[in-house]
Amino acid sequence: MTNRAMEDPTSSNDNNNNNNISRKSCRERYEIFMEDSWCAHFFLGPNPFMARYVYALIFLVTNLLAWMIRDYGHSALSELRHLKGCYGVHYCLGAEGVLRISLGCFLFFFVMFLSTVHTKRIGDFRNSWHSEWWPAKIILWIGFMTIPFFIPSAFIQLYGKVAHFGAGAFLLIQLVSVISFITWLNDCCRSEKNAKRCQIQVTVVSTAAYMASLIGIIIMYVWYAPKPTCSINILFITLTLALLQLMTFISMHSKVNAGYLAPGLMGLYIVFLCWSAIRSEPHTEICNKKAEAATSADWLTITSFVIAVLVIVMATFSTGIDSKCFQFRKPESESEDAVPYGFGFFHFVFAMGAMYFAMLFIGWNARQTMQKWTIDVGWASTWVRIANQWLAALVYIWMLVAPLVWKKVRVEST
Figure 1 (tube, rainbow, N blue to C red):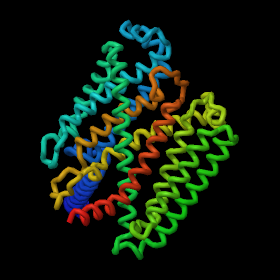
Figure 2: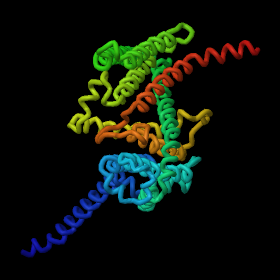
Figure 3: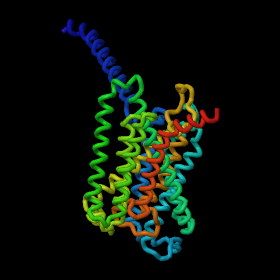
Figure 4: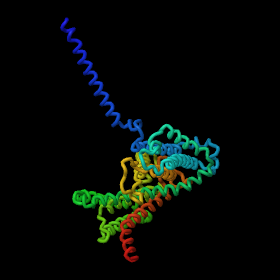
C-alpha cells in the first residue's frame, strides 16, 4: 500500500501531462479547423471571396420573391390602393410586382456599387463594408424591398421602360465576358508554352464543340421547323449555320490564323442562343411543338423554370467577378494587398442583373400575360435573343479582323 501511495504522485503527474498534451492537441486541431472552416470566413475578418457567394444568395432569394409575387401575389397586390393606376388589368398587378421587386434589388446593389467603387486595397475600410456588416446590409435589403411598394404606379411603369436598357447592358456585359473567356482560352492553348502540351485536348474539345453545334442545328430543324411554313424558325436556324461557317472561315484564314477552338466554342454559344430564342416563342406558336408541351405546370416545366432561375444567378455571378476583361489598361504589376476582383463592377453587374431578371419574368413586355412557371416567353424575348446572337457573332468577327484593320490603317498613315 505504501509503495502504491508513493507511486501515485508520479502517475498523477503523468496523467496531468497527458491531459495537457491532449488538450493542446485538441485546441490546435480546433484552431486549424476554424482557420479552414467555411463558416470561419464570416467571423475571422473580411473575406471578399466568401462575400460574393452571400450576394449571389441574396440575388437568388430576390429572384424567387419576384416569381412568387408574379404567380401568387395577385390577391395581395390588389389590396394596395396605389396599384389602381394599372388600368384595371389583372395580370398587370403581377408584372408590376416583379418590377417593384426588381427596383428594390437594383437600388440595393446600386448603393453597394456607389459605396465600393474604386476600392483598390484590402486594407481599405470599404473592403470591410463589402465583406462584412451583414446584419446592416440585410436590413438595408429588406428596406429596399419594401419601399417600392409605396411608390406610385406611374413611376414603376417608367422604371419598366428604363429596365429594358439596363437588361440590354447586362446582356452586352455578359456577351463581352463570354467572348473574352473564349479568346483567352484559345490564346492560352496556342501559346508557345502550351501549344504542344494542349494539342490533343484542343482537338478533342474543338471536335466535340463542332459536333454538338451541328447536332443542335439538326435537332432544331426537326423540332422547330417541321413544315416549310415555319419560315421564321427556318431563317433563325439557317442564319445560325451560316454564322458558324463564317466564323470558322475567318478564324482559319491565313492572315488571321486563330485556330479552330475559339470558333467551335463560339459556334456552340450562338447555337444555344438560337435555341433559347426559339424556345422563347409564344406557346401558341404552331411550329413550336416543344413549347406546347410546356403549357401545363408539369415536372418538366417546373424543372426548366428552376434551372432557368439558377442560370440567371450563375450568369450574373460569373460576369460580376470578371472585371479584368473590361480593363482597357492592364496594370503593370498587382500588389499583394490588391482586391481579388472589382467590388464596384461586381455590384454594378448585379444591379443590371436586377433589371434583366425583371425582363425575363415579364417577357420584356409588362402588358402580356405570363403563365405560371414560365420565364422569358414572348416574341419580344425571341427577338432580344436573336439580336444578342447576331451581336455576339459580329463582336467575335470584329475581334478577329480588328488587328488587321488597324495594322492597315497604320501602314497607310505612315
